[in-house]
Image 1 (spheres, rainbow, N blue to C red):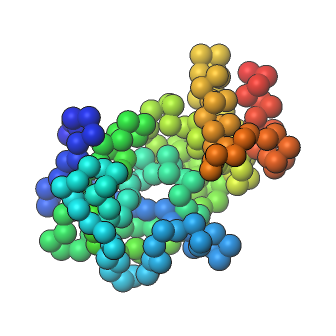
Image 2: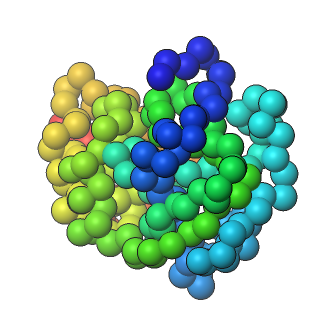
Length: 202
């Protein structure tokens, strides 16, 4: 499948059946407020808003991904779920510049098989990933912030070089400036500060 810019592709029934979809959400009590929807587990969740004829930003529905792309969205949750698509529901492959064929949407999903994200699972997702190199730099920031240092160091060693250093620093700082805050080195935890200093010294 090839996207025209900003276009969404409706999947066939066979494509839906042949694809293993996954989704990251927050399930830990201290993080649940970050979800935009109160998800039910092992039950059908129905989106509050669904207009598939609109553009990606206005179509509503639920975002989800596939295993080889989902690491790009690590900042979106602390738990990984399998996504089951109910019979007769339409699924769209949404245009995304940084992670082609990594964002899917529909209006009804069931979430099953929860796995808490830890360093081991993050590493597994990284080793199985198929995303552009530029998309790994926000992931590097997330992993360092959450203490997934084996994964963070592997991304750093394999994806950061003299040609990508400046972009990696830019993406790292943008992650820690989320919400319009200025980047402040003093507010980074020990692991994030270690990775940032490595980026500067590359």
